Amino acid sequence: MKVTVLSSVFLSFSALLFLVFGYSTVLYTRFTPVFRTIQCTTLSSDLGDMTTDDDWVNVSGVSTKTCRNDNVYDMHFVQRQSGAVFVKQDTGLKQVGESTVAESTIPIQGNGTLQAVINISLPFMEAFELMSLERVQVVTKITLQAEARIHILGFVYSIMDEQSKVCGFELQMATQRVGLAQCAATLEELVIPDVDSEEYSPDTMGMSPEYYAEKSHKKDLAFGLLMGFTLALALVTLACGLRAMRGPKAAPDEARQVKIADPVKQSASENVQQDEQDVDCIRV
Image (cartoon, rainbow, N blue to C red):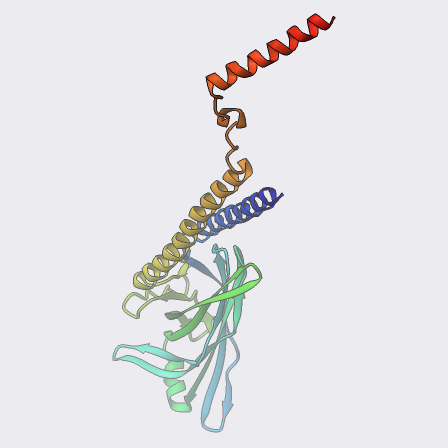
């Protein structure tokens, strides 16, 4: 009875460990690679009507992008502080306002939107100078906090990283027509499309090579240790369970332990038995 119970305990624990090993292998495969680049495409860019406030001219614009998340976890984006908006001039960038990005979540292997609102405020004279130009290039610097929300066994694990982008678009002043917005990692890499251009390259958001290598190493180490430990322990408990099923070794045959009697005593015993048989025969 004790052997059966002990064997059942070992085999049950071994089966549980094999399940943990299998689930860990599935998770490792699922989270490899640790991050897939998110691609965004501009849906629309609109500019509102100009308004005046004392000696200032104000105008707002909205740029909306649709983004594709091919990762196996949600991606949450939030802007911790407003970004700066500039007008690109021959002498450099001149700050004219600020931009805000609405908080957004892009679901697992799904699509979501990111919407940026640009507010520009200029004194009358500077506003009239810009309005006298045929076209103006507007640039904004945006920093978003990207959070990966990973769900495992009902628990939520978060990985955070900052995404900094420089985005720009061209504005036709006479008609207030807004061109497609384009983003890049740095101002030097930014190529602002012509206001009449319909060609567009998708924006990407990804991890830096150093951060990607760090997270990949941690994932490989954690899952490697977990899979190695559970597999080794599963095999050990399986062997113990199979051994317990066989029970203790059988005791040697008692017949083999009986010593051979003394030949003289054995012969005397046989003679006595023969005499008794002869007496019986005489009586008969």
